[in-house]
Image (cartoon, rainbow, N blue to C red; front, side, top):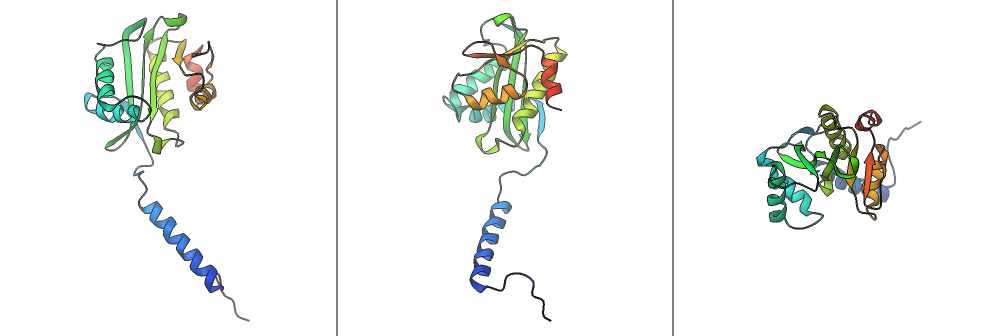
Amino acid sequence: MEFRYGNTDPERSRSQTKWCALFCKAIEHRPFRNLVIEIRPAEQADIPGMAAIRAQEWETEIYWVSRIGAYLRAEQSPQQAGLSRSVFVAVDEPTVVGFVAGHQTRRFGCDGELQWINVARERRSHGIARQLIVRMAEWFVAEGLSRICVDVEPNNSAARDLYGRFGAERLNDYWMVWDDALRVISSAK
């Protein structure tokens, strides 16, 4: 009795070999170097990377370099914002692949506001937004800010779904709210 391992059909074997070669090449050249993304406070040097990510959705990098820089320096503030603010970046050394920003506010009776959260398009669906939201929530809690609001377009179902998974509820057509930032952290576990 003879045992053969693998496929004995030569045509199918060539097809499988081609597929394997393409798959292996794709894995070899994937843009994700690290499996662990570092979440850390943003630095001045991170602004161009954050601007590039933000410009994927709206405006230009030049616009966002200026706007994000002014926000970090507390030279530009959203309506009813306090001076207490923080920005965190997700880094796959040496590249910024996402960021989140938030500040103290009085808008809509909230204590804090999630200003921006963005993840590079090619890095979405890998849990980076989750890590950023949790880190921002930890900052809000450490600052004693509990009720957190976020501005979100009515037709942005991806953002609404993301915030909803962490317990945010509709405040009005353009805003969602977390009544307790601690629940954001506990819902991520």
